[in-house]
Length: 331
Ligand code: PBG
Image (cartoon, rainbow, N blue to C red; front, side, top):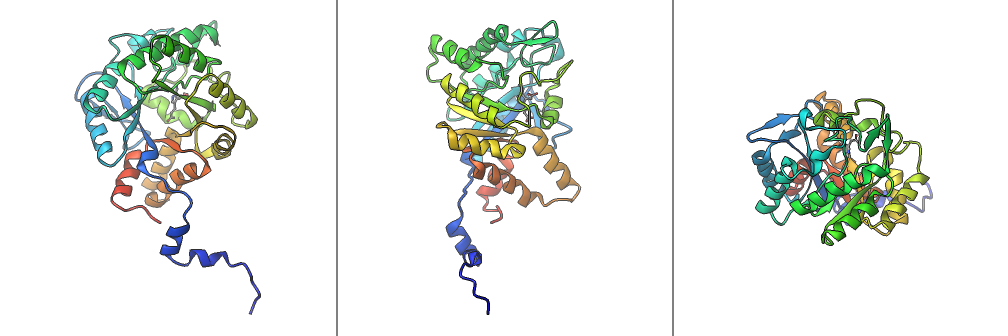
């Protein structure tokens, strides 16, 4: 006989005991489903690097929202796939009154007023340069970009978005957007700030989905260096001071330490974006039979929640919620 006073395995010996002491409970209510939208009707184009994810026209997006709501996902973030000929250096189509992205938002809110709808604010989907800010002589200029972002944000608030999602990483944009919203009387429209957004290779499939990759250079002068952790707190503090309602870390899985830091140090809800590359990697491995998708997918999402993100933006949202509702999640 060994004298072993501490036996942690006692607490794991049955499913009933494991249920009692489980610390992290992820539900569909924590998830935001990203949807790619395009102009027209009857269009449903699968994104080749993201099996199971589609670019959807207005009619198709309404069907997708309905299906998600049916399994308890009530929050959505929309991204526009814009025709190349509508793109300009200043991305002005982003705030244009006839913009299909704004029309689709109005239509979703008219059909399903109870959903939480989040926008994306940045120039890249509308920019002929494919950068999040204005490009002048090869430089991504900060201050001249700010009014363009504010115009997008106000147009989105008018269209009925509940939360504005600045993903551009320009300095001071949260404050400028907050002021513009307040001036236009959208005091109840919130801001989910992409606070610690890293210059990541894991956005690759997303840029294919929107054909929004930079035409030259990279995003390293505005998105963060993946090697840095302290800087994330500085970005989060600035965004909180400027009026952000939620603070986001992006991507999620390679940045769980950063999620944890923000959850411990900041007094705002923390969101994490489980990005396109993270989705594609798992789908690809599952398609090859190299990994058990049904177990790995909820494990990934649970780990992001455990790290401290109360809110998760994820392309897995609908599949997770379907399994959750059917009682089919592994435990
Ligand atoms: C750009 C934006 C990106 C994503 C969301 N908004 C890509 C980028 O910064 O190039 C990526 C999302 C994903 O990969 O799932 N404004």
